[in-house]
Image (tube, rainbow, N blue to C red; front, side, top):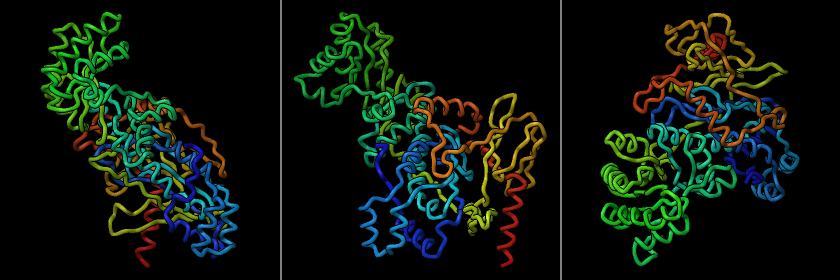
Length: 479
């Protein structure tokens, strides 16, 4: 998977623009692009960065094959441009926010600097990769938080939008906090625990439910979880499970792992099942719930007192069904003229779509006493925020809203990933990213984590960057 050449997975206009730059002698002109997003899905307070490792693999394999060139020749591109593509070698600088980091609207999460043909061409893959995995990681974390410490398993492969959606969705869900996945290849590729027991078809294959349970228990006595809702959860499923636990599992020196309920009223059934299991002496037998769950259903059934220990969440996680689009965009923010950086801005009648110009850095400011994140500040790339001096932050739109910070720690979020086309970043493994994500989430105030009406986290501009932006706005307003 890591060696798949996806060079031609690009919007066609990237190629038409590349040819235009080439034909007009601009192939070596240096450009700066930001990837950022404008809105957190589900009206949440934050998103989670994911997909950087796959962006790296894509850029490392960026090259045009002979068949690519032959295809483009049929599209009537000139031989001089095709020769340039044959010798194409990625040479850009790339910065990115590490995977697992909470991210907020308006701040660059990926920055690319380099020859405009190269920097422009990679837009599509950067967006689709980071958009997808950040979407699923964010949704997974919402569901995990709703479970209030109970484990959540990702069960969505069969409902994912394509096999890549299943594989990389499982990766992103794990980063977001899930304990494992039903997607077997995700364990092979990313060492994410693959989890699963049986389908209803297993029970249906046997003459009766009891026999199906016996065969499974004999095969997996040390890891036996039985699916109890094929026929009647409380009248046959749970009683048969208890009988098999007593007759097949305990005599072999093991304890049952659990039962799974995949339909019906989860609150009512889990309460009743818990009483039956406890009465039989199986207080340690866990109850797993699945069946079209999301963060709101999980939250509600727990409020109702459901006795569920683990959740298996499928289609509403792997597709982020409630809001299946992560609106990341990729915008030009500067070019170089004779080595001087010239800022660029995109205007719009929609104020929210006016871009932040310039080559930038993002600082996260933490309160030293609580270790909680206070605000993010977009600065010029070479600006330094001095932790030892008071620092004023202000709302970039409502500039009268100001606050002077003391006793804070400033951390740069964007780290170098490529320098002159060479990868300089060592990707952590998926488990390390997951642990990093949890540590970073602990720095976010609970008020920002609310599902409804979360506190708005501050993303401000430095005075220097704000002045630069205002100057550009003023210059265009008088033209």
